[in-house]
Length: 284
Ligand SMILES: Cc1ncc(COP(=O)(O)O)c(C=O)c1O
Image 1: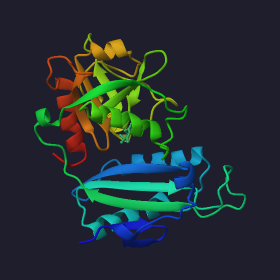
Image 2: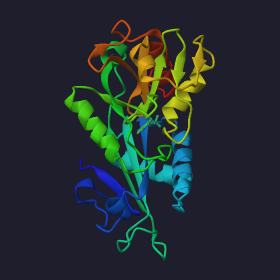
Image 3: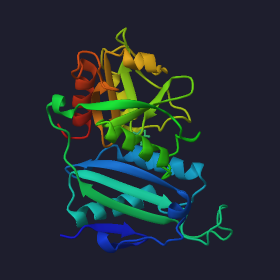
Image 4: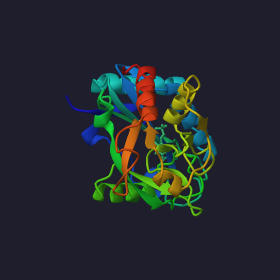
């Protein structure tokens, strides 16, 4: 069965699906995207992802007239046509195609909308098989990382460095030496005192939907918890490091820059939170 993409109002075979070469997403990265996980036809945290999409679009003044409810109908149809019941949905919205010029088109053009889906299984039930390594890198992205922009060049370069180092993620730090987030995930630690920490929201990190869902699940756990910044030094000395994201779920990082973290195995916080998150999305 050929994969199908939704492109600007029609469903097309993925191999033929294309956008205009003057699309501002291609020319300038002038667009927003979202990634959602679906498990057994149940979209994980759909309302959070759609609300973040709406917010990101508002922040860049991109007016998509399709409502979140209409988007959900298209997402469901893309999943159906691709026979994806468990996997990932990608959505890109750009400011549309117009003669190349940096400012917004004087006469607004129709935004471009692309939705694709692909099968991807849930993480293994054994968390030990879901661990990864990370490297650390300076965060050289722009000042509005809270907007889920399609401008991902720094993230792409960081991920490539991680891959070359045999690692899953690049954990980024700011000029003061505080950890911001991963190139495609939010970062959490259990610090040397046993407190679970993740950076508070601000313009320097993406407000992760998985982060929000995990925070909600933390409410009825015993873990001492704080949304506070932490340094690279805290990261290196952490008892546990884990990532959250729609594609990472809750993912323990057991090696950082080639050195073991904690006892080198997934810790109790990541184990509990992965289990709770998988239940939350109906995958356990
Ligand atoms: C830079 C960045 N931070 C955090 C996240 C995690 O966000 P979410 O949990 O909504 O997938 C992502 C996900 O793609 C990301 O790209």
